[in-house]
Image (cartoon, rainbow, N blue to C red; front, side, top):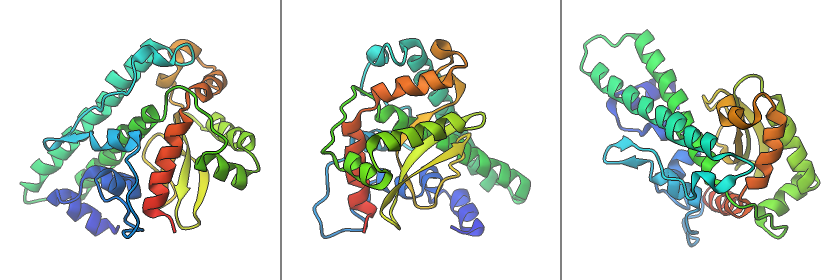
Length: 261
């Protein structure tokens, strides 16, 4: 999307901020299922996509409900951290995203659109939409661990990385090596029909174009500091125990059906 189109679309309110920020995932979340394969029957929405769809109601972004209680991931992720992470941190990103969109609406009423102001608000859109969307996916793929060697996701990462354990080791190293705050992400890349592991500093979604996150971990300190203090490695190791592999596979199958070859 060109700078001119991005700016015009945001200022006229014709493109939801999540689509601008998230690319293909935005399209999936906003209801255009099976874009690449319109003649094939659609697959049921994964839990994560249902959570994404629930984020926009009555003209504004809202905090999606978690599909489990805050204490459900104990002892690996503690209830207090989960509550603060969801009800305070993610809620703040959603509140700020709505405020930024309102600020754009007010800016449209002025005669002089200052480039610096537009640029600053555009960065706020990216940051806060990133926080809202990535956290929804992060919470959406958590739950009782359900590793299934026959699932499409596990089979494909085993094929592409040598084994599931090698994939997990690669992902862990990326998450451990994020400098400062950010995310490690395993994304579906539809051009090559592959799963690629990358990282995002902060949450401005500086990711592979067209890629769609499937498996992701928040390594900002707010995600683990109450229980693990500065021991990021212990947090990452514990996090693997609450990855709901069945949900990751459901999301993978849906996005691959929608965007794959």
